[in-house]
Length: 315
Image (cartoon, rainbow, N blue to C red):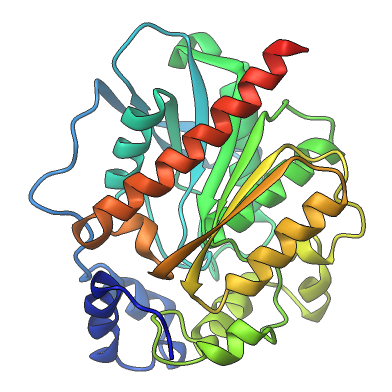
């Protein structure tokens, strides 16, 4: 029997009224998800919010939203990639969470509105995310950021993209990343773990929906084993930035998130893994129901990030 807290039960009731999303067109699913309440009466205030665009390598202008905390900069930087199965989501989806993240961590948060599948399949969303990392690194004064202390992170597909950006930065000898924060990340496209069977239906992110998301993102069968899409298939994870991995107890992605955390540890990467009891997939961006748990998760994140930064200062 699943261990669901009361807020998770309320959250899942909303999904029970929905049709089978895996049979719908992407734009239909996007319209449906916009109806789910994620923020209360008003989002939390931060010192400053700046909406702008940055250029991609192919001439597209990538929307970003920069959140600045109170205090004196330059601030450490947290580049955030939203979830949504590579198909859904935008800056507004994670706005409320990014505001809390900014205030709680005292970091500049740069939220990235990468292009979505299936209109833009792999590698375009990933390259947009990597371009954002490069732009931040090249423009520290513009955002009042300390780019010697940059974190990449995200939830679900955003966690997947943060893991892949970390791998790209290592492989391309790109901008230095101090840490990666992965919240219930997609790390594989095999859909066959114990948690996939245990939570296959009725827990928000059904197995069939996750398979549908994967099919929208990949180009062909070979992509199922592409480490930039399925990081768990990567043979060598050594040399990656320190990572903290959060998984929800009642989530199809739970076991692959924990498996990726184990692989990182085995590769010698500083790693911490947190199992969020009673939680379901999607809790981290739904402030209206899960604000207390979001703040609790961010406090754990911040403790890890401060520890990583402190160790770097000792060297």
